[in-house]
Length: 364
Ligand SMILES: Cc1cc2nc3c(=O)[nH]c(=O)nc-3n(C[C@H](O)[C@H](O)[C@H](O)COP(=O)(O)OP(=O)(O)OC[C@H]3O[C@@H](n4cnc5c(N)ncnc54)[C@H](O)[C@@H]3O)c2cc1C
Image (cartoon, rainbow, N blue to C red; front, side):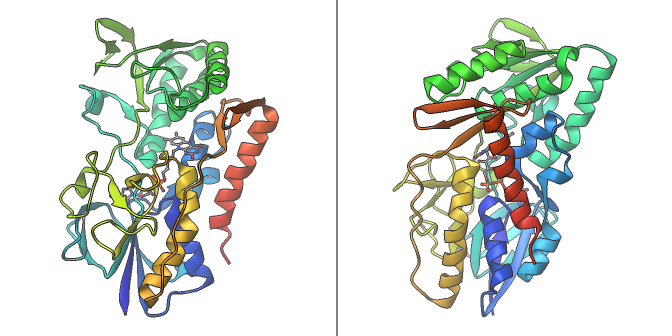
């Protein structure tokens, strides 16, 4: 028996589990290690904050999915990986050996990047922790006007700011701070214009930043102090620090270098997908869309690798449909240079998101 270790139940790994539920890999014992007992779907988290979805509606329970896949589920947080000796160490000291490793643990947020953030801010990741803490922050608005500052003006920051506005309305003041550049870097002009209009309708003050410190009661943007009760960190994703000593080939930022077959550039028995990877041969943005698309190829290649067959390449699509939730049931859809906005786009986004949850919750 070979041990196939699935580390992290990210978007791609869910596809691996669904494929295993349909057909087991002969000769493989499958172990799934996950930090949480459910996978909260990030695409629906802004809707959760806005009060449009319940936690249950945004969650995929891992125990039933693992059971149908014939995988042993271990709850635990990986803190080290030894790619030469083929084992992972969990936070509780447990050592888990593997023959084949599939890594899909997603990104982390560097808690030390902005002084004071670690002690004072609410981080979007881990999403599980954010979802537990957000109701406590929200409850403060029942007592007094709440000053909320969202730090980071990428898609997640914009969606969260609009969601907070939709939920708290006039019970909060809202500020969105960019890292110095424009709101929604990487998006076209028309999407940016629409998003800025939506932010203005919600009375969200947009400041260029960057944020230099977070202190109790306010955030600092250089010499400017902005009153803040709840700083929400929506800064982009970083590579997990625990991969640094793994021996895997990493890029300068610490992401796992993989090739077209999703195998590590240094260790062919290690596969990886999602936001934790970098593809030098086919660079693409880090987003759930790409992680989802990699899933079926990852599932096939793990199966073929165990069986000793030829592996398939994964070619990321050149562009992807983007749906940005505006917090009130509407969304901006964009494809290349085109963008559309309205309730129909919001309905479309909800439909795609709910179908994703259903796909992994209704396993036979
Ligand atoms: C608020 C928000 C909204 C977003 N909306 C969208 C959207 O609409 N569309 C889109 O394409 N992208 C969206 N994104 C980006 C998207 O979340 C990421 O690109 C995506 O989650 C990456 O998927 P992944 O499979 O790599 O990792 P993840 O989805 O992060 O999954 C990783 C899993 O691994 C587990 N894990 C992490 N570390 C460990 C460890 N050390 N040991 C064990 N398990 C571990 C985690 O608990 C998690 O279950 C959004 C992000 C945020 C924050």
